[in-house]
Image (cartoon, rainbow, N blue to C red; front, side, top):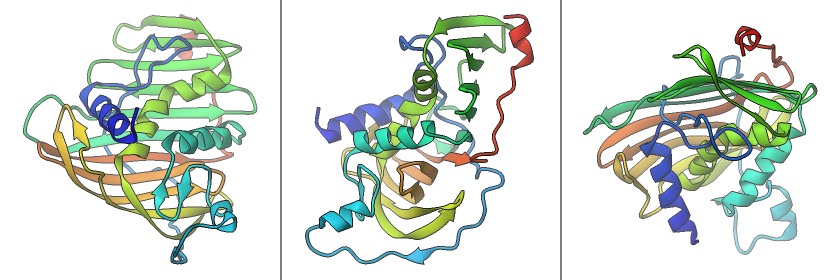
Length: 272
């Protein structure tokens, strides 16, 4: 499938439903919410940026080595490679708190909804906890000892339980959300910033590719904001506003509290 077709399909899925990435090894169960209030992750330090060198001519091997897999000075060259690099870095540790929120600034219809995801991942203990509040459902999830358990907040009961691996559980919760955003923007490298003791690359959002379409809001006509990615491929921040023919939506995806995140067993597990 061509990249344009992938982009259209992914963005439509991102904005049409209350969730993109199904929990569990088989792709069933609760879906990750995609439309929720935008917010900067608490505790993220204000970055000090440095100017990026201007890219000229054909990139050399040395130029490519300065960027994570799937990335270049011009932005994202290969979304699949960029996503794979992000999860390699995330699952290599240390622990991290993941947030995703979107906020509808304006809309010409009532099909969209604000949604939120908050997830804590502890790679040392191979545990994770996620709170997923979407337009149609509110669930929590807990993974430990090879089992992913989903709890229906509305019904106060177990909604699903499945055996899987820590890697598959961690990837399943936010994968489609993040992948959709890797397809959604045109980017330009502008500088560098220190994040969690490492150098990260800063990209300004310059717009959206042609023919980017959402079934909820129509054609995307413009975007602004920035994306911050570590040299190992970890996507630290996505802070953007996208304008569609049928509305405007603000998004935030972020990694924070790297190395300082703990995952406790939730109380509802005693009833699960």
